[in-house]
Structures are given as C-alpha cells and as structure tokens.
Length: 167
Image (cartoon, rainbow, N blue to C red; front, top):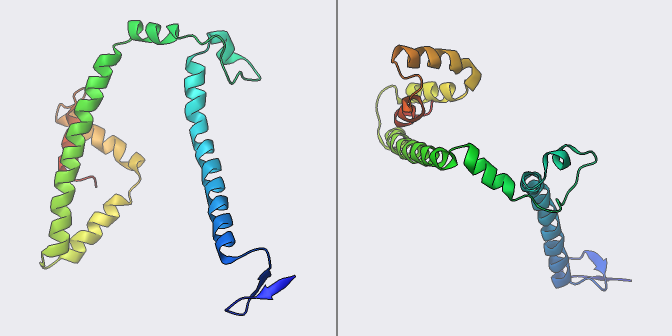
C-alpha cells in the first residue's frame, strides 16, 4: 500500500521521510565501515606477522592471530638495528623538507596568484608541465647532478630540492 507525498511521488506507507534519512545514513556508515576495515587489514596483518615466529609467518594457510605472541621479536629488532638513530634521521629530514616545501610553495603560489607580470602564464604552464614528468625520467639526471655537486651519501639531495620547489 502506498500513499502520495507532497511532491506527488509514491512511497510505501511504512517509510517516512525521516526513516529514509535514517536508513540512508545507516547504509552510508555500513559502506564506510566496511571500506575502513578493508584499508586497516594490511596494518593488522603487519602487526600480526611481527608477533609470529618465523615458521608461523611462512605457514599456509596463514595464521591470523599469533599464539603465543612473540614480543621478543621487537627486542631482537632493537638489539640488531639502531632504530632510534633511524627515527632521528627520519624526523630531521621530514621537518626540514616540510619547512622547505611550505616556504617555496607559498612564495610561488603568492607570485602566481597576486603578481601581474609579462610571461606569467607561460611560466605557470612550464611549471605545470614539469609536474607532469614521471619521476623515473628524472632519476638519472638528478643523480648525475648530485654526484657533480658531491652530494651523494649526504642528506642534501633529500632536503635542498624542497627549498626550490618540487617541480
């Protein structure tokens, strides 16, 4: 049994406007929750595998919940590798790269948005075209440049380009 609504459409008697909104929201949350679980699955697998023995990690079909968990794996990792030094290096590089990117990108964005000059559109077109170059095309020329500057095996190739723009 259906009844007419204000705009003339037919809908079942038991579904009101509020009920349709609630069902739509529930369906949206169900889809988003399912998607987020799919995206979190690799993270769970990584942590789960880190707590397994070598034999359990190689087993097929895989074991989803390791028992007993091997927390000794983390102790062994800390003893074998300088993880604290790796973390310090990462934080140092990331902080400088973020600062350089913010500084150079802000200045370029301000220049392109506020300053009127002859050739501005051509320069912007060149900037956009360099952004479209695949990274693999630039690897060898960048290595040759950094080798010429004697920057190989230093932090400079990771940090300095951020201060001059990403393209």
